[in-house]
Amino acid sequence: MCATMQTKGIRKRRFSTGAYHMMLLPAVILVLIYSYGPIMGIAIAFQDFVPSRGWFGSEWIGLDNFKYVFGMPDTMKVIGNTLLISFMKIIVGIIFPLTLAILLNEVKNVVFKRSVQTIVYMPYFLSWIILSGILIDILSPSGGIVNNFLQFLGMEPIYFLGDGSWFRFIIVASHIWKELGFDTIVYLAAILSIDKSLYEAAALDGAGHMKQAWHITLPGMRPIIVLLSVLSLGNVLNAGFDQVFNLYSPQVYASGDILDTYVFRIGMEQMQYGVATAVGLFKSIVSLIFICVSYLLAYRIANYRIF
Amino acid sequence: MMIERRTPSRVLFLYANYIFLTLFSLTCLFPILHMAAMSLSSNSAVTAGWVTIWPVGFNLDSYKYIFGNHIFLQTVLVSFERLFLGVSISLILTVLAAYPLSKSNLKFRSRTIYSWYFVVTMIFNGGLIPTFMVVKETGLMDSIWALVIPSAVNVFNIVLMLNFFRTQPIELEESAQMDGAGVWRTLWSIYLPISKPSLATIALFTIIFHWNSWFDGMIYMNSPSNYPLQTYLRTVIVARDLTNMNGSDLSVIANISNRTVLAAQLFVSMLPVLCIYPFLQKYFVKGLVLGSVKG
Image (tube, rainbow over all chains, first blue to last red; front, side):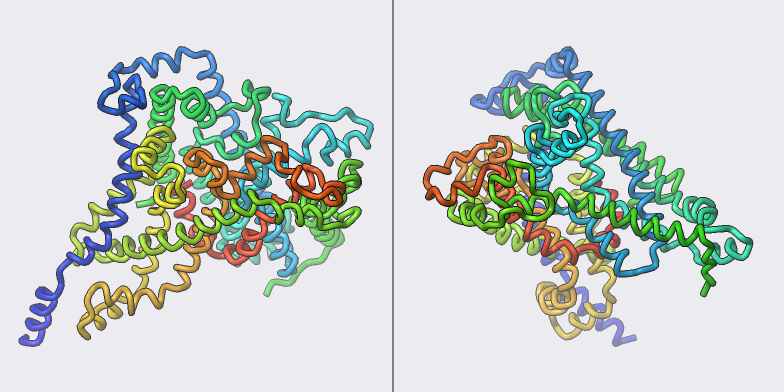
């Protein structure tokens, strides 16, 4: 009795949370300035912002920036492009890694399996600067290896990155090239977590490997497939700034311009800060709604919770 | 152990599978091998389209050229500088923020408030222009700190670290405090030594993040001599022009072209990542759920 009281006393006396607050202080200050600062700065969206006059001196114009943006013919086209590219990426981004994971799962040779995984995984870690540098060279209509090959086959060279109808295809294909390895590893982990006895029972009942893949592996992976696709809904307005920005050119704006590149051009090149922030805010709010809806769906369908 | 039935169709499938997977991974690897081969080939072979994945007219002139190129070396230096500053500052901030947040609500009652304070920034951000204005207003433009400070606090890393601290037995801390160690001392002498593997993982993530970043360099740096490597590479890729070529001697010029030199630069800038990434493979699966939250 006496001993417990004593330890309690010691803890109470010695234990103050002051040190904890001190530890958090640097991160709190930096987040305040560089995360909450910009969130406050969203006010620019409702201003006719002039940098020389600053936040306090610029004129408040209500929703005029939004009216201006949605009055521009490009805006709707850009939103359309963004959604189209995102959805293509989501769908193809499920089919390819899933197929690769199922095929890799059939491989029993560990060294071979690991090598394929490591090779396919590599582009994931390279920046879009490097990958676009490579893509621009190999897809070049004059002397790029892909077009050399097409000419060798007797075909006309194709300007992949300058032709609106090819551009989206290249965007989706190169997205798969970069992200494939990561998603494949995720799906492989999901396959490994499927109960092995199911396969044994199926084999006893005379089901071949094809049937096992179709009736056990795929249904077993359904939760993770649903989860990943639902969660990617929250990112539907992020069609890949780094990628598009480094691959596109004015020739393909009609089919390849996305919200983020649009904001960049309005804001950083045309210096229309208020308008660009308004588009950014619109994007953030829609994304926030999508994120909430997708988490709700993930919770309902896959019983997945983050918090 | 299950008995494998080896029907002819099964054997055929297995062979087809091996062949398909081999071809497929070679396709993924091909562009990178092609780049490496081009950087080691002579200009005439590249122009003629003879180079595939093996150097034709092998020479190191493109590499000699880029390592004699003042601007390229300068930008590599900037990249290493931001790597060093960025990784050390991020690690310190991550550990300092994660440790208190890993404590229970009973012990540290303000924990919930702090957690929400950080989590909100994961879901919502100010966007391009307001962030740019804040960096400008805080006087970081055109200095190395613009590449380090705004991204120094990574909430995702804090969550990773916090979860690691939380898996440690509570007795660890209690015994240290019984022996009279204060909070700082407990963190420094008890928790830090055992978190080396987690710290190493976060450091590798951060290294790749800083090495690959290019956008901040482009918008925050006014003079190209302050560009980090990736930002500089972008100007080369977009401009497709080597303005500094006149300074070199002609014997080198004969073997190189914009394409071979760019290939060499791309390959050199890939190398650090290629050396690190195989070590990261297993950690990515662990962070799967968190990763998909962050998107």
